[in-house]
Length: 365
Image 1 (tube, one colour):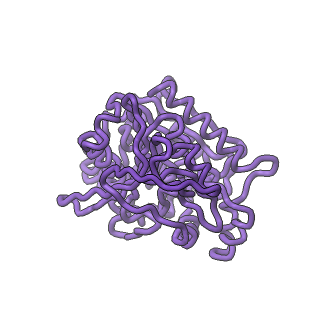
Image 2 (cartoon, one colour):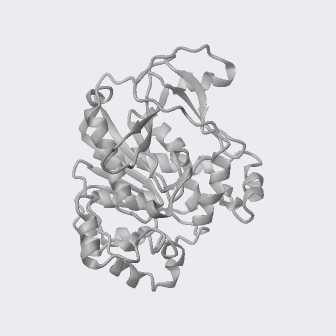
Image 3 (cartoon, one colour):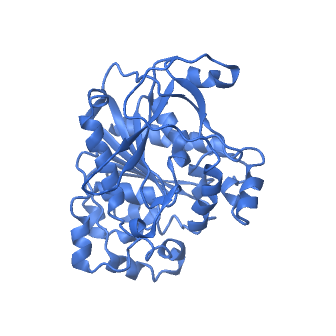
C-alpha cells in the first residue's frame, strides 16, 4: 500500500492541477469538440484554500457539484498519460434550486483527490455537493512524517471543511445540514469511521497486529503514530473526533480497521456502507479489515458488500491503454494498480461501486 501511493506521486505530478479559488466566479468559454462532453455533463469543479491560525494546518479542498450549463471552462480533470480524466466545468456556477446533500470525501494514505475524482463526479451528477480536503502529511504532494503521525488530524480536517462550508456565504444556503455524509477509501475509510465515533486504541491494535494476515496495514503503525500512545493519551486524542452532524458513512476497502475498539464500533449509530475488495492483490485482506468493521458494527445499520471482482486499486481512476506500462516503468512491480480481474473491466466495477454508493445515499440522505 505504501509503495502504491509513492508510485502514483510521479504520475499525478504530470496532470494539470486546478487553480485554487475562494469564491465562485462566472466564466464563459468557447466550446471545442474535445471538451463538449464536459459541458454536457454539467459537473462543476473548483478548489478552495482553508487557513487556520490555531492549527497552522491549511487545507486545500476540492469541490464537485451540479453546475449551470456553459458557465465554466470545460476541462478533463486529472487527465494524464496513465489515467483517464473526468470532464467537468471548472469554476462553473453552482446549480442548486434547493439545498443539496453534502458528501465529505477522504483520500487514502499518500493519495490525493484525483484518486476518487470519478466517484465525486458521479455523485455531483446525482445532485450532491462533494468536498474533499487533501490531508497534510499523508497527501501525494504533501508527505511529512511528523504530520502523518498525527492520525487524529485527518477526521478533524473533514470537520473543519464542514465547519467552513456551513458558514460560507457562497455555500451555506446551498447545503442541507440534515443530509451530510462522509466517504473514504483505504486510510480515508478509516478516517470517516473515526468521524462516526470509532475510537482508536494503540494497545488494542498492537494485540490485533499479532495476526500475520494484517502485516501490510500493521507495517504503517509506527509511521502513522499508532504505536506510542498510552491508553490515557489515546483516549484524549479521540476526544472531539466524533462529528454528530454526519448522518451516513461509506468505507471503501479501508485499512487499519483493527485500531478501533469493538466497544466503540458497537456504539456507532449512523448507517454505514462497507464496500470491500474481494481480490487481495495489495495484501489488505477484506475479511480482516472491512470484515472486522462488519463484525462489530450494528448489523441493523450496516450494509456490508464484498465486490468479488474488485481489488484495492479498483476504487481509483481508470487507467488508459498503455497506462500499466507507464506505472511499471516508474515503479517496477506496481503496474498491478491498473489490473482488472479477468472477465471484467474497471469501468464495469465502477458502475457497480457507484450503484452501491448512490443507492445507499438515496436511502439514508
